[in-house]
Length: 351
Image: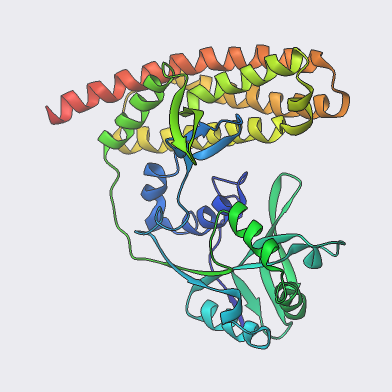
């Protein structure tokens, strides 16, 4: 018997594994299309200037954020015995539930050492004794087959995990349970233009709020909220690297953060195309075409950042800075245009 649940390997969020797993499930179901248009649509940069999907300086809550589209159930590692793991996974998939499993990822990848990570299992082939699992290869997710036994071995490698290691893993991960199941819920919703208008207005306004503070563990931390402000963050990092900040040079993953900005921009472009068509909004095509140019510019920045990683030559960081400023200015034209269009539409249709 073969059972494969729907999954979108080209999910709208790929740069965060915890986000990819959930959005790859949600985006594979047509009835949830409009949920995605209204959710997971904000970026912020934290006090270390890393970019994340979330709001108000916090990543999206991986339990509560999806409540109206995903039924989430959690299990401890000890609650499922290794010799019952295969049956547990197969039974859940037969009931149309996806299984997220914490394991020693290096066993699956045939690498040395312990690396605790989560994997998403969305199908199986009983005759071949394999599970279907998406894995990240370079910067792209691909579907791969793993034997039942390899998955069991990677899971039971954590059976005797020392308490201090277990505590540290729980602290740093974006999920709290070792085993999680997801079940798609019935969900019907039409997208309202007010939600899109508020989102554009938020992007437009947040650029003025460069620093917002919040208290976390008895300290005050800075973060910047909103997609547009993330340009400023990346420009600040580039300036610090150019000025010789070696700590940043060694610790900051510029390529990943700029790829996240690109990923978000591609998604917003696609969302805008859907909404303009849905509401029959008469937008200026010449202005909207800037979105394609912005994506091209950010893709170029990603490629240049890889060259910088190999050479540490500041000429590449200067190039990135120039391109980011160019993209930033093009964004202003688009955002102002969309803001005016949606405001006029709402006045005309609802006033």
